[in-house]
Every structure is written in structure tokens, then in C-alpha cells.
Image (cartoon, rainbow, N blue to C red; front, side, top):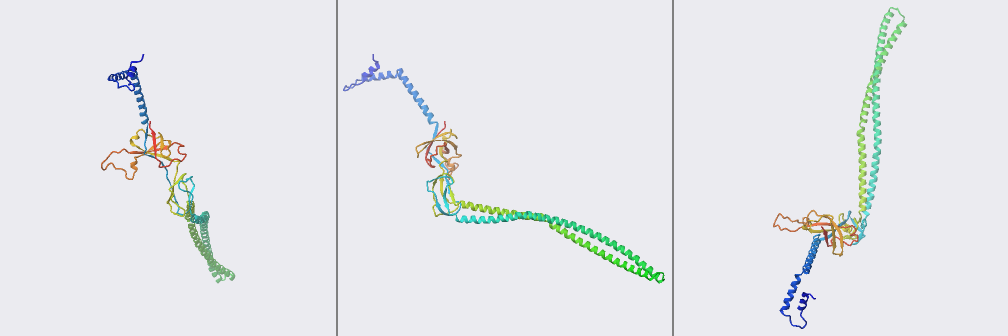
Length: 423
């Protein structure tokens, strides 16, 4: 038997070409809907629908609160400036703009002729300084041996002179003793002559004996004079020995200046060695300058903003081009400060790149130590004027996962939209 509700609904449908139903049919339809909404099936269906909406709303809320994103982000990277280290005339240019180069590739060649001459001159000066240093080093031991020998010789001379003084004094003492002996003999001979004179006058002795006494007296007197002469000679030898001693002492004092002489010689050797080292440094600098005539790429990357041309004269420090290393790039995202509540280093990031239309994986590396406004040319000073609170943006560094940027399809400055999963 058909349900009353379906019958009422069927009766309420107007027939084609039939006149409008009377008011009783509308009332019937209203009663049928009311009865349907009041039925158990309608309540269950409504409850299930509300539950589904709540579950979907919960998961949608969980999804949209589990990440933070911003469109104020771009790819960053190192910009390595290539500049000249020496002045000169550019004779060869080996790269063009946007060319990929490896680290160490020769980019620009400067005329090396002047620097080759400087190297030859520095090498000759260094060789001369080395020769002088070697001669000074050899002179040190020679002078050391010579001064040591002089000291020993002077000490031996002093000892010999002292011995000579002692020997001269002994000879002088012996000469004085001989003088005393000769004078004693002379006194005896003279006394004997006086006695013999008296005896010859009395003719008690012979003339021959008297003549012998006279001869002995004369001989004794001569012996005294000879002894005195020997004593005077011995005295002179003492004075001469003293003179030799004084000379030996002077030679010894002169030889004792050997330490000072050695210090002078060693100082000269050290000075010569230092001069050789200075000339070596000048040679090294000349070789470096010659090496700098070939300007090489500091890193592997893309050549950009080339301004140097063949025939141009460059100066030290003059920028010639830039090299952008594409292996070392990252994302700088400026998040609002209210987005940083749950953000921390290590969180996963999905990076949508506008230029490629691709999504790359990365993670939060670090959060800046200050807002971007603090690094501007004129940072805001909230202590003056009227203060209006503005939500600040904090730079966040996001790095790509390993292998994500190996294809070199990303460039610094590209706009990206990072999505940081904070939950």
C-alpha cells in the first residue's frame, strides 16, 4: 500500500495543461513536508550532515593552522665580486655574460710584461742578498776562532812577560851580589897594596911581589866596575821586562774585547740574513703580482654584470664582473611577527617558485636577529613623533634540501611562496 506522504506528494503535482491546484493542495504539501522533517530519517540525515560539516571544518582548521606562508619572499645567494689585484692593460677576455664557469677558470688576462721584469729584478737582488748573507755567516766562526786565539796568545804573552820580569829581577839581584863581592875583593886588594907599599919601602919584599899586589888592586877595581855595569844592565832588563809586561797586558785587554767584536759580527750576519729575507719577500710579492695578471673565478657559478673589455686599463680593486654560485642559494622569507609564534629552526618547508612552477623541499635554517626595518638606511625611531603600531616583518632563512638545486634552474631574486609546516 503506497505511503500516505508519497500519495500526498503525487496528488500535489500539477498535471500538464491542468488548471492551478486549489489551496487545499498547497496545504497538503506543507503538511507532508512537515511530517517528513519531523520523521526520524530526516533527523538522522541532518545529524549526519552536521557531523560531516564539523569534521570537515575541524580538518580544514587543522590544515590551515598547521602552516605559515607568505608571498614576501625571494631566493637569495652569494654575489662574488671579481676585481683586479694589480693594475695593467687587459689583453684577453675569456668569458661572456651569463656563462657558467668553474672555480679557478681564467676570466681576464692582464699584460704580464712589466711584472715579468719586476720578477727578474727581484730574483737578482735576492741572489745578491743571499751571497752577502752566506759571507757574513762564514765570517762568524772565522772571527770567533781568531778572537779566541788572540785572547789565548795575549794571556800567554802576559805570563811570559811576568816571567821575564821575575828573571830580570833575579839577574839584577845576582849582579848586585857580584858588585858586593867585587867591592869586597877590591877593598882587600887595596888594603893589601897599602901593606905591600909599606913593605917595599922597607925592602922587606921583592919588587915582583909588590907589582903583583898593584896588579891585583887594579884588577879588583876593574872587577868592581864590571860588576856595577852588569848590575846596571840587569836593572835595564827589569825595566825592559816591565815594558813587555805592560804591552802584554794591553794586548790582553784588546783581546778581551772579543765578545763585543763577536756581537758586532753576529749582528752583521743577522742583518744580512734579514736583508736576504726581505729580498725574498719582495721576490714573492713580485711573483704574486705576476700571478695576479691572470684573474680567476673565485667560485663556481654564472658570470654576470661584466663591465671589463679588452684594451681597458684596470686598477687594483676595480670590479670587472660578478660570479653567482648557484649551488649555494637559499630563501629569505619576510614573515609577519605574528606568524613566528610556533616557527623554529628545522621545520619542513614547501617552496613554490613562480618562475619554474615547481615546488621544492627545504627547512627553516634560522630566524633573523632583528626586523627588516632595523637594517634599513633610516631605521624607524618610535620614541619621536606620533606612534602608530605596524606589524613588523622578520627575515627567516630557509635552505633547500640536498639535491634540490642541482639543476641550476633557480636564480637569486626569484619570487617564491614558502609554506612552513609549524604543526
